[in-house]
Length: 397
Image (cartoon, rainbow, N blue to C red; front, side, top):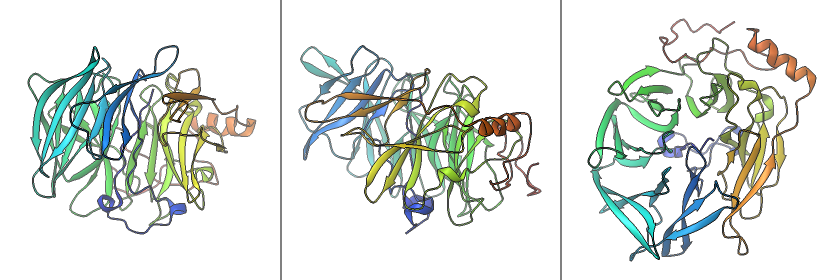
């Protein structure tokens, strides 16, 4: 089950004032609820005003339920949380403007237990952000982003406190896991003020960096989500419309071009994927994708499959923790919500209906090696994980 990916701020992207209907993203994507990779637990900051505390949700039982994990001191609004597969919650706190401390919280009888793990210094303009939950559910990682270099830290699950894992040249953001073991991590990197390009970082080879996306030489190419079972990649790039981001999809390791469906482009709303249906082994076209749609009037939910030319849209449940949710392998979308009468709720939404026959034929042709659909722009293919970047700039056939 796919958890949310971290989005970068407009400042980090070097973009200002984009129209929301032209590929802009929310200033900072905050799911409100972070879900483990296996969908068993989740965590959020609960409470009001200055009385914030950590709340852990259990999602894999007959009914979801929440356990409050308050401490003697309330949490700050900027506290970052990450649930682990054993039910503990990692808490990252910013102290004195530069020191980041890490603790594990867990219920112990009527009280809350806290295991302090150590701290990481982030001086000056550097900032530290937790990465999405690791697929193994045991380890937790954070990025410390400096002016010219990004440091990757293992902040939970190591031998003794935070450990420096890798140093990557450039300013990195995002963070998407590419496999089920937690070895391969995709980051969106900007070098020397150039375009953003997604790269793969091998954590078992000292942080070795490999090009992952290079649609055109000058385009900003970010990876938003990846499904290890099918290889489906959800991509945001301005390659088909320079200066305006578009949402597209590709397949990891494929020689086919990235596709940018018109149905995912809304005039007055930003569309951001937040969950992909797991278990569709080697069948990326059939994966159901959940999308958060943000407009002036609020947020709602979109559902879509690569083989379809239409995006379904539906009202979100009242109290939806916008941008949070998960798919079951059977094709049910589970959306967490909070109301006065339901402090811990999950609303189930069925997968989108089967697409029309002509869309199935288009998808089958793509799998067999056909070119892109005629209504979609021809752009260069995504760079497979172990292949050198494109240098000739020619579109894939």
